[in-house]
Length: 345
Image 1 (cartoon, rainbow, N blue to C red):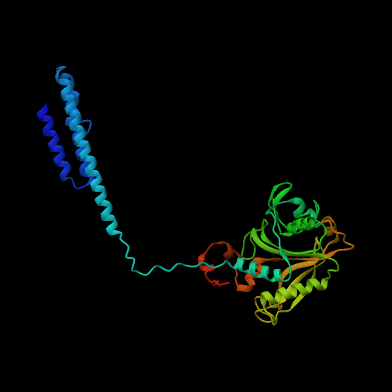
Image 2: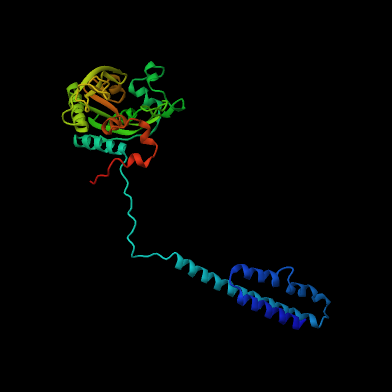
């Protein structure tokens, strides 16, 4: 048995030495050290030996098994190292090659419009105010002169979470909150942000869109101040040659209320497909703050007055950049965004 063990050891070590890959090494391991291998068979036959021979042969079998196992591990490590070296040589990088250009992203057109409007109004002394997108019914409706059951609520299809909580339908709740926070002090703010309504998505409607609203509260604020502010904005956004007109309208939170149109920037007012051959394009709604809204915000309507306005950012962007479908803003198609060239500064 001793001679047989030494012969098995020599055979196993020789096969390990000539093995050229991990598969061949594994075959050697199974053949000599596996459950059905000759060394295992010898261990199973130890019971047939005399008590005097058993310890000696047991030690010899263990020594042979350890020698073969150690040699296998050394060879495995050697082959793995060679494989890594070959892979590194195949994947070697030529550092002298010019690098691939890094694509620099563009600001989204909606971001560009928001920033442009913010810059304009900050220069006019306004603050940028923000508020929660998940809003209380009180701030979204009631504090804006829209009590529960008021028919004007039907103008805004709403995503309700509970009876008293909803996704805001406009950024006007920020105005209501700001009036309470200012505690009777005059202020000027604009409120950009996302709003939500249960509209069916099509080329001109989206269940989620962006608004920018403005609010000015102080003493002796007049309709002429509102008109001058809107005129300045129209010329800044669409060109100095633009003219505006105000048409009577209705909003529960302003009185009087107006819709603002600008002269068509494509045809100059002569009539085209953009202005539906009227020469004018509707842009936003505005008006003088309703006395009830001032009073609920903590302001004495006999002493203070104010004006408010609100515009859809997508509406401005569609007109400014000639976008025909509002859904382009939200499909994450890089071909669309890449049209708006990146500008520095």
